[in-house]
Image 1 (cartoon, rainbow, N blue to C red):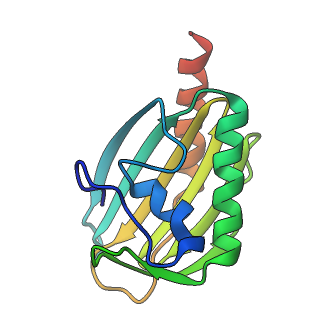
Image 2: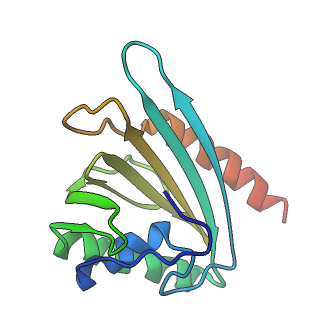
Image 3: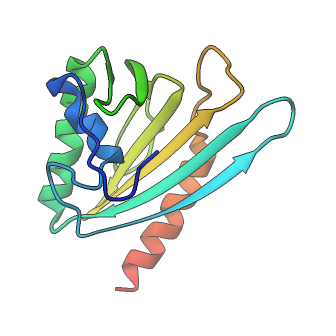
Length: 157
């Protein structure tokens, strides 16, 4: 989704924090970002999963990014990027129960769950590429398993 070297600019200003998930130049700069892609083409589905780990300068900064995103999801009903990439309708969904700060929403064919653990914002994304009418959901089991690994890694530093 992210194009190298290109900022993602939303066509609706209230939606910019959502677009920033995919931007190389978000409004609040990340200290670092890493990610992993996974695919599942079984059972007639074509699911694409991506996990980003975004590191910020402080717990407060990571919290503020998540709060700004939460407000944007409340205010933004639909948007696209000005470069023509389509996102569509935005709607809040129930986030998995974790001991960290979390939120979840759908955006077009994407389902996203975000969890803040200290200075790290973990972004879990599921996209259906088989043209179903609605995205699936980010597996709570996947989220919890990855958060356990993240907490263990952070505890070592």
